[in-house]
Length: 255
Image (cartoon, rainbow, N blue to C red):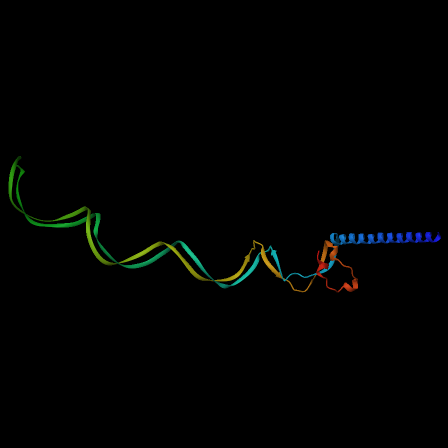
């Protein structure tokens, strides 16, 4: 009877230990599953203030820069340029021209000709007329016939108007003095070498696109403020002395 009780007690003890083991194993598996879920889905937040760090930038860093001040540019060279010209040019002409003139045409002539001269008369005039003569207080008609010599100098002062066309045909050298300004249309392209020497104050009105090349060595920076979100799967634990000089792996530095 006593042995049966002992065996039953031992069986109950074994069952209790088995139950405890199963519960412990379930708790361990549940904790492992919870830890795995947390490890894969939960992120850690890391707050940094005034933290020294080292960064390495790409070889070519594209930037956009705005220049607030005018640029002082010094030029001392010759510029080859082509200048299009399309305008009216006034050319003053002050010269004497030797020309050959040919003229064959009717020229209208309208003027007043003043004639001042004397005419000498030396001739015999035939007279056959009747004149009234007073004889002894009476008037009588007296016929006169004969030849009368006339010698005299008669002055002439006349203004003769002339209005007619005169036919002129002439070919002759002519000297003409030209005193005039000629307006000539000029449309051409002028190629010129323009020397430029001076300092220019040039404003920059648009932003500049540039690439900055930095040295390959890591640069020392200070992180003033950073609130980083780090997945737990990218973190690992280590000793400070062992990891102080060890290079960080990509998984350790990726945000």
